[in-house]
Amino acid sequence: QKEVEQNSGPLSVPEGAIASLNCTYSDRGSQSFFWYRQYSGKSPELIMSIYSNGDKEDGRFTAQLNKASQYVSLLIRDSQPSDSATYLCAAEVGGTGRRALTFGSGTRLQVQP
Amino acid sequence: GAGVSQSPSNKVTEKGKDVELRCDPISGHTALYWYRQSLGQGLEFLIYFQGNSAPDKSGLPSDRFSAERTGGSVSTLTIQRTQQEDSAVYLCASSSNTDTQYFGPGTRLTVL
Image 1 (cartoon, rainbow over the protein chains, first blue to last red):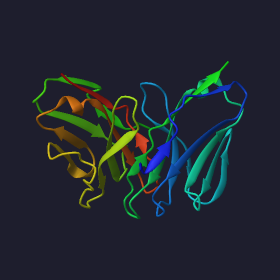
Image 2 (tube, rainbow over the protein chains, first blue to last red; image 1 turned 90 degrees about the vertical axis):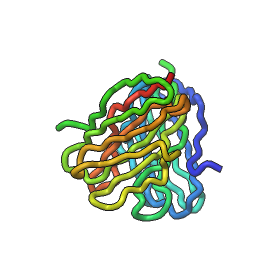
Image 3 (cartoon, rainbow over the protein chains, first blue to last red; image 1 turned 45 degrees about the vertical axis):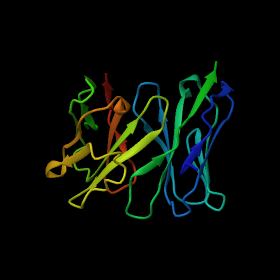
């Protein structure tokens, strides 16, 4: 079992719809979770970080964390074609002090105009 | 301000040759990370430097890989006797005391 798992997609949604991206992780000790967006041929850029159970909202983005279910999600409201990219879920794995991230393989999102 | 920079942006080498990849972190960032990303895959952790502490080398795939960070700033990732499976994009990231890691543009390594 991979430590961080994502559906590879592609996830296709129409412009203006809500895109829902999901991620599960295996290390119950993980405390910090991140969503990165990566355009083709570019490096990842941070979209959201989340540390506590519940929802965290930033503009059109909402991250959700459920530690009991070991589940992280990212909702993108009013999806735009410019949101089309690969979304990488990442978790700090291996206990405190080990700040390196373990990434999922990414979900490719396509927003259809 | 300046972000993380990496050089070269592209490197083509022959199997068996050694290569050096360079990373310049954001000024003042104490933590520096190396990852690699193979085609269509997520990022794979390689090595992590934090201040003057011993680096976390747990992600290095073989003893052909090594990295150093001089003066707490610039880092060099060295791959000896390159193999075709080493072909990937090598990404460097840095962070301050927060969790946020800022990535450089990467070095695309192609081993022929």
